[in-house]
Image 1 (cartoon, helix red, strand yellow):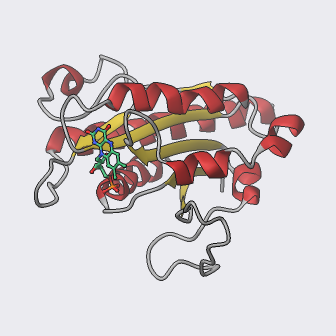
Image 2 (cartoon, rainbow, N blue to C red):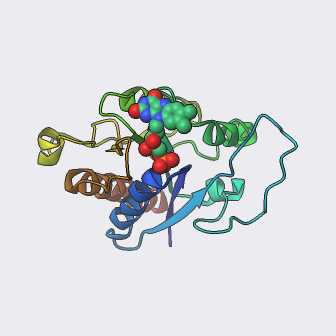
Amino acid sequence: MPEILVLYYSRNGATRALARQICRGIESVPQMQARLRTVPPVSADTDQKIAAVPDEGAPFVDKQDLRDCAGLILGSPTRFGNMAAPLKYFLDSTSDLWLSGSLSGKPAAVFTSTSSQHGGQESTLLTMMLPLLHHGMLLVGVPYTEPRLSATETGGTPYGASHVAGTGAPRALSRDEAELAIVLGRRVAEIASKLQSQSAQ
Ligand SMILES: Cc1cc2nc3c(=O)[nH]c(=O)nc-3n(C[C@H](O)[C@H](O)[C@H](O)COP(=O)(O)O)c2cc1C
């Protein structure tokens, strides 16, 4: 069954909560499956040793996951208005896939979480799109035909799914944030499904 790779980094769980809703959206599309993967943390000490398998949660991504996927949805917490280093570090290792065009023509989308409402969600989402464009991917957003996009008072943007996590105790996804994340997952899966059936003809 074709799979959409949901690849995220999350230190405190907010971005992971969005990833789970995106997977629900993907799996609401007949014959489409989600593959959830994460990346290891990085540190200034590049000799840092990490377990090959994380203690809990999604497995670490492998470049074969990118070759295999029918679409890719990339998520990161916002760090100073940009994606977090662990995700960027992994993406910087993908030049062989760029050379071979492994991701070219596949649909892609992005998601993020911030602590504050105006803390840079859109800059993070837009800059996360750049490596995907270099890979030749087809970017998918959330259309304004989704009424929640105009109504939301928390996260959820036309550029991708998002969550405003707050600064205190972890805030659960709002209904709008969760539903818009589901919409994004479903949209990428539907487009991937159509592209796959066209290429099979
Ligand atoms: C180094 C660093 C930089 C951050 N920069 C921002 C920022 O620019 N804007 C913002 O609103 N939140 C910022 N945050 C907060 C995180 O984006 C926020 O807590 C997010 O929900 C964490 O996601 P996670 O639970 O998936 O790790 C930053 C956090 C860290 C550690």
